[in-house]
Image (cartoon, rainbow, N blue to C red; front, side):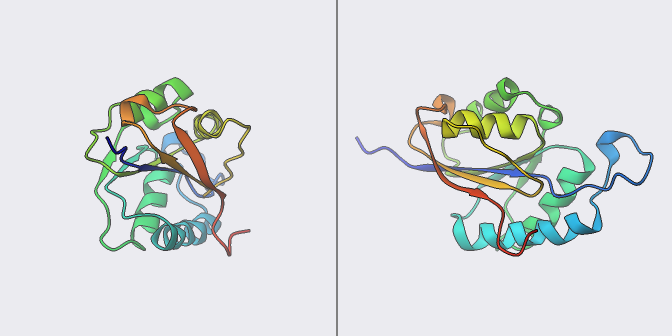
Length: 164
């Protein structure tokens, strides 16, 4: 029996704007974030398989990150906004990944720290830092329902070229 390789892409939202007095969930991207997000999208376009589904936090900065990044992808993948991704713990993010249907080959998860760093660290088997607009790409040779540190292999971690 042949194991199907899947790809999990973790994308932390781009740099947000802290200058206003809005609720955290409503905080927009800063100008730097508006520059970072398309660069992340170009990296995804050049280094990742076509994305079948993106699960995105409903926070404004995460939605804006995905809108700008996915505009660099052809075709733009479908996105599902999931309230659980906002301020999610490691356990919640794993639950979300475990629910993904197996016909999804490449999944992008767009969210926030500390959960994104915790998930990346678990899957990589080492401490990971997910900076704003950071990407972690994992190959997974298991059904989504079984994803854990033993089934994932880190392929890339960092930011796209051109990001400071």
